[in-house]
Length: 354
Image: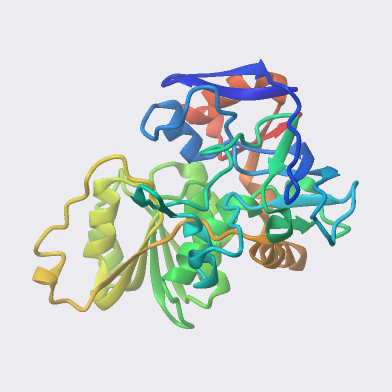
């Protein structure tokens, strides 16, 4: 089968691999649609280390081709998705409700992101076929009447962005600022609207993304190339600051900006993947006395999470297809990486169809 294979930093190629064979608790799915994530670009750049020879990708939409001998409740031929996070459902972290951290306790100590396996510790979704581990905990059947493209954002981008809004504990009537309006930030904007925020401020410097932010529910947009975003957010909140700030890029500047616009007792919900150490400025942190909360989120996974997200899509309350701006075949995956990594041609998300 064909697969997008990580060779070394700066090099992901389309190559060939043997067809994978599912174990007793696994499912083999034939990929019908997948995409490229910002985390895949971190892998490409060598900012997040994975082993050479790994198939990349963690956002699968497909059809069940084969089921492991212990898998019940599914049938060959069903259309399914699986989350980017594939918890076992039985680990200590899973039983505590932290599915994303499943498997973090290893013989070598604790490590984060144990639930992220696809395209990280095992072969991923940018291929003709994919093994979904612990299928009974992770496969979610796509409802009739919903297209593959409509659910493409559910495995990661939608789950992560809306997870950031949920982690921020947004309440009806809240003011919320979202720093960066890439795909995850846009989903956070949509999530803030769904959770009842009444004053949503989206910050970016790309016109198309600011326009999309309005489509996703932003009340105000701020172009940080034209005005200081912190000053503008404070103006738009009459000097009060926001109840919740969401950081969706993974940069020192956006993290610091999100901290500076919080009201006393406000919450910073961090979604970015950071490549360097963060510094917390003393004044913005109120010397540690501002009653602020800083919370991080890794994409919630598991089949129940996927079911809920697909219900949101089916309800018409979230326009997931609007985020897919470019389409490629799997044969053109290297071109897709170039377009997405360099943000060419107004790209938001690419759809890759084997």
